[in-house]
Image 1 (cartoon, rainbow, N blue to C red):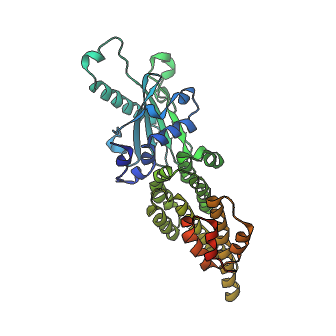
Image 2: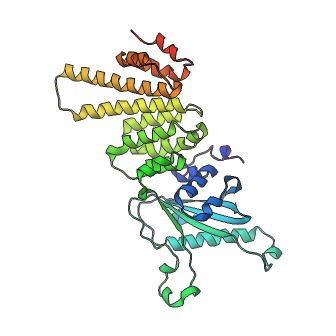
Length: 351
């Protein structure tokens, strides 16, 4: 079964969140290489990565966490990566114990799927399991990072006490500038998922749009469910519905058109917010000012998109665009991605 078919059905919020994103090998490898600073990460090649289609989550926890498992060949050695995604805001102090239970279940599966005489050979070894916890809660992670630290009196027995450590990837501890600088799928997801003040939502989305504009269509397609179901939920109701509608109707290969529509929606929201923040004035003057501001914002957006499409835009066109009213700019925006030549602007522009 190919990755495309695996991702065709989305049954619950978990599947539209990190579990959905990380079920793509490309995104899984991005997670490791961007957020784990260990030498062995450089040895991982996407072609040697295989997703295991099984979950080990205990029944009591299936509403607040999800997991994903990968088998990776590193220099001829089989390694299993177990990623547990904490979908709650509070820290679970029993995390090391739960990870132990899941790891034992994975090893049990390994033993069930090999011949008994092979497992009894002196040379037989179980695969290494690397446990990773992906946490997006607002509070700092304060659970113990090693298993032995959860045991009373472990200090007395040194190496005779069972122990392992897990890797923590804490979404809210990364700087937004660093996430934006990655310009990839997982970095964009983290950028939008971090906890931030409501006033920063539009700034974050604008940062994300800059990244999306440079993405391959297939990468954008991977992010679509995240944008519609996870990020859009942070937006005010009216804006959320518009954003969800724009993204859900987009086909792969329509990245630029989606960017235009999203930026236009954002611009409209900016205008509304500015209007609310201004002191009440004369109705006529206020309406005129809003119309001028809206047209000016659209003109800047049109110019930016034309430069992306045609690289060079003659100054005469830039000046003419700035003089057009909102209706003309709307017409240009709706047809901009069908233009093959910059001179096609002439049929829209008024002198």
